[in-house]
Length: 192
Image (cartoon, rainbow, N blue to C red):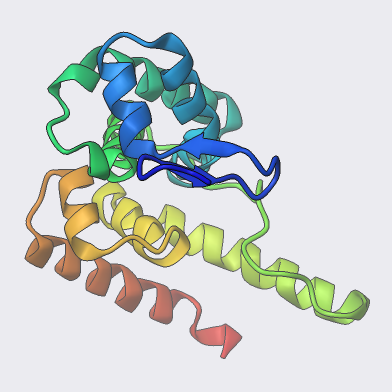
C-alpha cells in the first residue's frame, strides 16, 4: 500500500513519489528527483516550445534552456504543487523571447498536424489545405496574439496561466485571444 506521499504507478505496480515530493527532494539537491520531473514533463515542455516557435531546432533549444532555468530556479519555487504551471511559464516565456528576437519574423510552416485527417484523399487534401491556410493566418498575427491563441486553443491553458507565461493580465490575454480569433475567422472565411 502506498503512503500519503506516494501513488500507485499504473505501469509498474510500485509506488511512485508524488510530484510535490519530487519537487521538494529536487529543491534539496536530489538530481534523480529532478530527472524524474524532467521525464514527466519534457514532452509537454517541447510541445509548447514547438507550437510557439514552429522550428524543431529552436524548440529543442528553448525546451532545454527552460529545463536548465527550472533546475537553477527550483529553490525559489514556494508552492511545490504548482510545479507544472511554473515550468510551463518558464518555457512559454523562453519561447516568446526567442520569437521576439527573430527579425524578420519567420513564417509558420506545416510541421505538425493540428487535426486528424479524414478518410480518403479528398478529405486529406481538404484538411491539408485548411492546415496551410491556418498556419498562414497564424503567421500574420503579432507574436503576443499568436502565443496566447496557441496556449489557449492548442495547449488548453487557462487565462490566468497564460497571463503568467506572457507577463500580462488575464484581461489583456482575453483581448489578445479575441483579436486573434477575429483575425483567424476573417482569414479562414473561404473555408466555411
